[in-house]
Length: 145
Image (cartoon, rainbow, N blue to C red; front, side, top):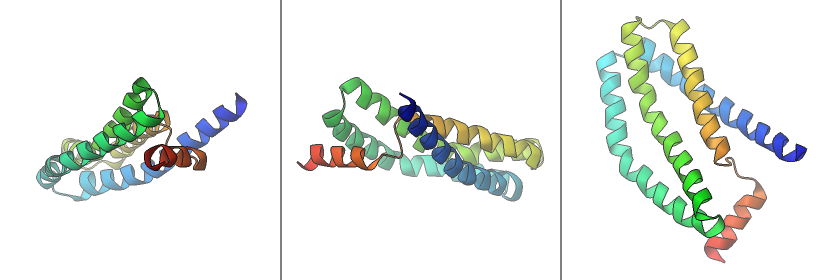
């Protein structure tokens, strides 16, 4: 039991740190230095353009995961991955809104980036990402074996 918690914590820290860097950069770029209207347009355009790709990935992952896990677990994992991917599109929108309301105040944009990173890390960790070598092999065997 102790080893499982250790692995879970390592995955959370990995997910948090990787998402923190990306979220903070996006918040600074779109909240401090970008024109708020352009940031809003970019975020909306990104969501519209990426939705078919994200939904395709969701369907493909769900089909693969449903072969390896029970349907309820496959649904949970696929939904967590879907929500984590959509969050990337909401960062420019949120940063633009906060940047225009507070004149690009980095003291307010920083915690917003941390909040997005925490939420994304929680979703990804609950989905079991990043996958261990054994988990990758198990999924690969079920899909192609």
